[in-house]
Length: 98
Image 1 (tube, rainbow, N blue to C red):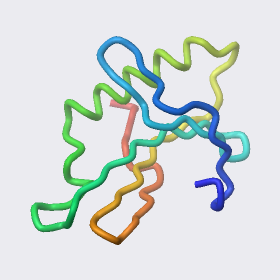
Image 2: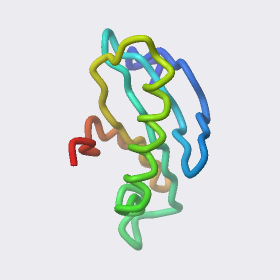
Image 3: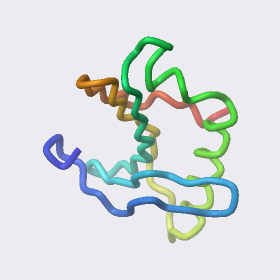
């Protein structure tokens, strides 16, 4: 992610009921990153493993982090998927407006 221009601010941010793997900054935007790994895409791959419950925990954890800031910047949720030897970066793939 550093090679792609993101600056890592926090690793493994944990709160009661959830965690965010990485919190980064890209220009003026705060990026919450979930990292998922699967040996292969045989059963749908890493991205498919993020269900509704996991999304809810990510959003709640992000809200807890945002409460620690003096002002809320623009934010997005990304997922970095490792499927075997393939790496895929899915930008802005979790909708927190629900």
